[in-house]
Image 1 (tube, rainbow, N blue to C red):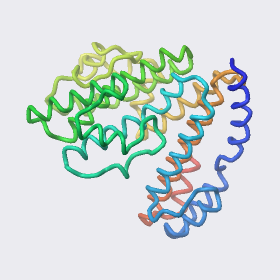
Image 2 (image 1 turned 135 degrees about the horizontal axis):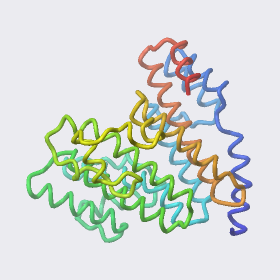
Image 3 (image 1 turned 90 degrees about the vertical axis):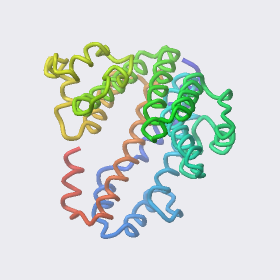
Image 4 (image 1 turned 180 degrees about the horizontal axis):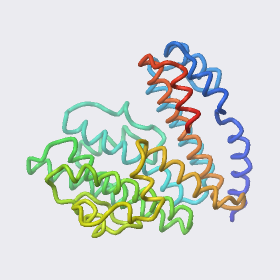
Length: 307
């Protein structure tokens, strides 16, 4: 392990102590309005100068991306963490391209590629500056739109497949067993989430499933066709489908997996901090949405206690 990563892990220990604890989240849940929630967030270190909470939280995520660029000394592991945001930006900009709208402001500024430059190249159908999977995904979108398949779902499907292909590529190059298992778990989760929807739709299931998980596409197709039973899957995968909150279950399994690899002399502290901060931002979003919707504070706190 490099001395740079050891130094970074020391910084991560300090940053981890600044994550929002249960007491601060409960204070946020007691807010009577979004403006009151903003006041609490400001006291918790969030930049609340923006007018809307989505911008506040996107800016906080951008700050996290800037941090992880400094803290992760394994280039492929860093790409593994950033590619979710790169492909979010790609989907936003490809939709903007065909809708003739400027969506640069909806992008994450601190992902791998500068959104403004990215947008300029996309408008010129030039994807040569981007990773292979993104370039191929964007080319596929252009082809489908030229053939008349001009829906946002087309963009999502093709670039999601490209994203997972890139995720697998980055995980392999990282040479980290933990990163590899995290990628596999994420692919399993998205594949299992598709089964119910595919059972209701008249589509070819194999076109939608993503390669690279622990459940192969042939088995997934049998599950979608009713020729196999989800209960026959390993218990941890069955749990992903047997809950009303699959995202929360995925986060629990992901965090348990990261904890199993606890070692201050590896990449594990970077991954643990990154996902803990990402979870915090997502949880803050859920709380603010509930506050904005007028959900009773006791019910919001019950949700927090159930996490």
